[in-house]
Image (tube, rainbow, N blue to C red; front, side):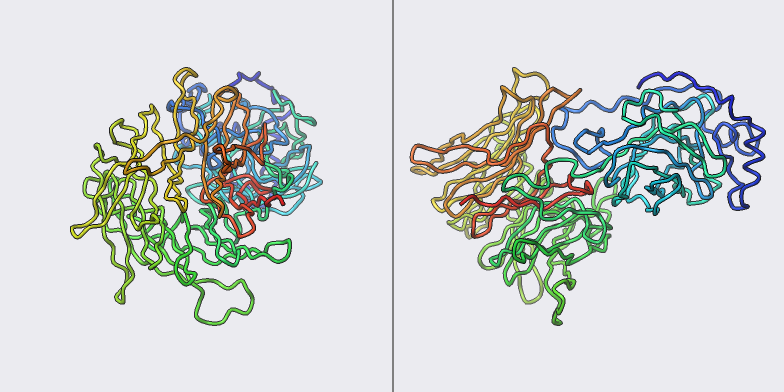
Length: 639
């Protein structure tokens, strides 16, 4: 944090402010226009957090094993240039004054640049540590107090310290669906707190007078709706276009930008049916959604098939697969409550979605949900995920920490006339057999193959085989992953027609310093009862501090495709990169290439990839896009 110069408010006479506030309509008289005035009044002073204390810095965050090279959900990391920051009015002050933005009071600040304002960061003063900002309204207009107001879709609060007037200082990161305009003015009002939306719970917007701002056009010109001209405030605006990779680049294009409205937001992978229709889940907008994209010529038609109801009916769905008869299956948070971690967790559930029995005449009708299975507790396959299906319609998946020893399990769901029957096929011990399984697949031979992130001979996880017998399923370790300081996180296991297995895991470069993480794509080939390991690709240690692989899929010819990315420059000032890679089979081995590669760009990809019959590749980003809520993208096959 930078120490700011105190700025005098001598041009604002306190008694004049008080008279003007009394002159506003009755509904706005309960809260003074400034925080300093409130601190001096007997009816407000007792509510302050720590009268007489000086500002202090927020405590440093807990040390993490490495800086994250790819963006997390908004609010869990620092704002990045890739977010599309187009105006920054400088750092907060916290010691001079702040202006009310509750009901009846509005504050308007100018900004330069333009586009869709999807994110706002600002600092506010609050009298109570238990009364935090939950939502507020923002408008973008060509004049002060102009434009149409919209309510924030999420607010993340970060404690910064306490100032000499007794107010706690908080940084607020607020998201909006997209208020387009600019250059012009942003206006904040109608701030709600955890205590409600009453003017008796004031929120004050920190004044910084533009000190330390570097954007063109700053310091901002600011106004308060009852008083007129005031000093400018602390704020940063993001948006203005796709905050990460381009919307279109060569044969890459975004085919849907999520807005966190009815379409949801933060998607997690796609699945494709034989007709070429795409399906996927989002983890935003209420409790999450399931969507479909139908191709119409060169365009795609988007529809939301289902909105999750939350609670025991499910929320935050993850992966999605297409089962028999086109039924969609996946896993979600929900089901039986009071399952773990002090009774605060749901056990998780498996959901199924199918079209409603009645005819759909519009092409955008909702589907109906059923719950084939709700996990019963920690020793069951709780929070099961990673579903796959065999030809008979049986479902298989893994539980990261369930099972008899709570070291992970592999489960099966079998359909029957009376419903679905769950079986725990194998419970890991966390020892030489492995633990914390991450994925499973049904092999060409009918056996199950999978990856586990812990245990094994080296302690870094295993590639395992499960074979059925009259007495149940027997596990064998076919490869021991190396022991890495921060884990190997093995994932994306697939198999080709010859029975070879392919997957990805991570490793730490010990010579590169703390937290230098890289990825490996590997193959395991069966040979005379043994398995032969071959490394096919690894992250670039020469150019980057972080370079790892995220997912993997295979086309009909056995070529591999995946995505990756990372950073250079360390944690202080990272420079990001992202790419789509191909590993093509050749007569002399495997040829690695990157059909799509962006420097200085974040490619926040994740979840399953999908290939259609023409070789076009599809995937998602959990953030990015014109609304910063994620995208579905397409990489068209070159002819």
